[in-house]
Image (cartoon, rainbow over all chains, first blue to last red; front, side, top):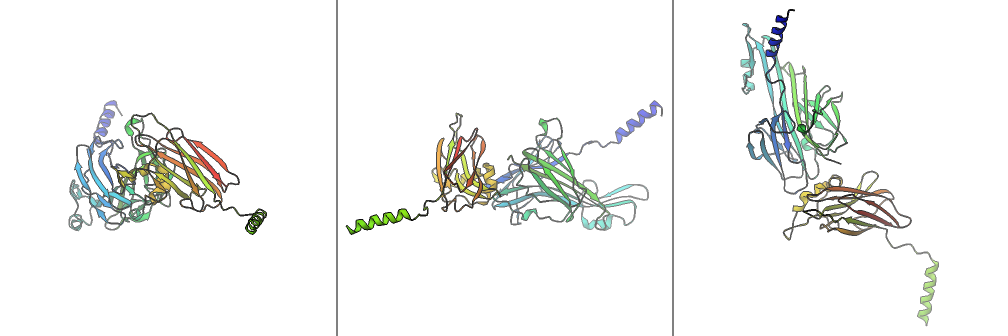
Length: 275
Length: 177
């Protein structure tokens, strides 16, 4: 290859790289996770940024937040606000027990090429999918047709008084973490076991990354990378106290028709207390 | 004359017959809260409890804020969780206040509390190895946990002690047989 050709090839490759070389991380950050007051409240930050847990990039819209109380009922957020770098909302905790604060989304997606080679996707970029449209819009047969089922879940847990486990039961949809160790009983130096399930079944091969907060004050990510074993379990021994962000992703082709592949992404925030 | 004779006979009889001890065993705990030279001092929250080798615990005393503006209030419960190990092992499953266990916060100095076997809150203790745990958490201050191991029952009166470094001074435990 002559020099000119090499340079042109390099330039072409650089232009093909996605503009955001790094996907930003979306996270929830509760003001506390262990509470002893009879009139307990927590405040939650929701943001998108690279540095965990520094809100220095963009807010996450918290419209779809679902709060599940210890008795299984759904509660409303209070005092919701979206600012420049984060959204905040308050959660009142009238019952004793463990609450789950979650944002869940997902659905069917399709990609294909028309006979003229035009690339099509459903739902369209920036559009919300209406499942009823699937049969109308997506052809049954097309070149490079890919139909995938995607799921996204982001959550955190808080406990007032004695921990309970009603909200820890899996919903059996998408990729989710099923705690074996209670998520509000985490202490530095102790090992916690979590199981990952996809659509209600434990799965091996889920890639999990765990990152402690305070990223701005050190020189490396300090990420713990693990994969779920045959039972779908990971074990994390927390190196120090603090807030941790956990991120997991999984994909396979064991999808329900008409999807041919399924994928899940999961994120959670855990608080680890000192001994 | 007859009564005096009866009395001395009874005394004689009593010295000849061994009498079972009617005095219950005690745990006498002395907790020293240090005098601290700080700009803003608040009396610490303190919890005393004992644990056996299996990690089962008995709640003995909890000194915390019981009032707000001169009235009885639950407001002080907000910071019970700051006694982290007590909260995890006992507090979060307990409906505070508890008669005979809850008390107001105490000032710097040595405080002695006695727990009698068979009586609340100590109750009956199986023989074995135990640890007395004393945890203190102070507003705009620190938190410290001091452990004093002991064996129950004690054959002779035994004293053990341990010392905290910041939030707790000397913790002395005397187990009387």
